[in-house]
Amino acid sequence: MRLLLLLWFAWGVFWMASAVSNKATRRRESPASRLLHIVPLTLGGMLLAWYDMPGAWLAQRLWGRSLTAWWVGFALLGAGLAFSVWARVHLGRNWSGSVTVKEGHELIRSGPYAYVRHPIYTGLLAAVLGTAIASGSVRAALGFLIIAAALLRKVRVEEGFMRETFPGEYERYSAALPALVPFTRFLRSAPH
Image 1: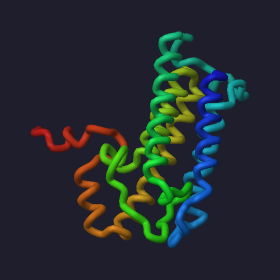
Image 2: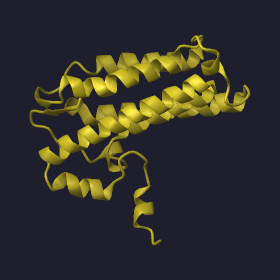
Image 3: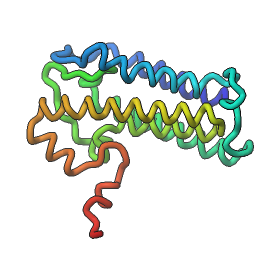
């Protein structure tokens, strides 16, 4: 578990360091809206990271300890964090930790944004799922579900901002690409 936490720590250091030179904010979600995803994200993160959490049912294992499950989880964690970093770097100064519209905001559609509309969240969900798989515990699975719900809510808020900021253009982008799961746009257009 220490190696998993080390990866998360390195990602967090990069994330904070890269947040210092963003564009000025023109519009921001309300503090209440922000709390509606920050509180669950924090709770989910605590469930994933707090190894000796009180509550016997939270510590129960969903499957036996397995080196295979640990390596699969570790690989998914690493790939997810790498994908989120790629998206963060590609988004550049348009990024913000809260849902915002920046001065001179651009609709980025290249790099990881050519595969999904929210690649940072895609990467984070993959990383959290990998952490939960490696852990194999009820608490980690519950943490994943809470974080997924919080990020899905944040996606809906962000989508509203983007539709208002880029009318028509964002609708076309949304029609062409899935929100979170790459390559599923082909499934939408497949005959039934």
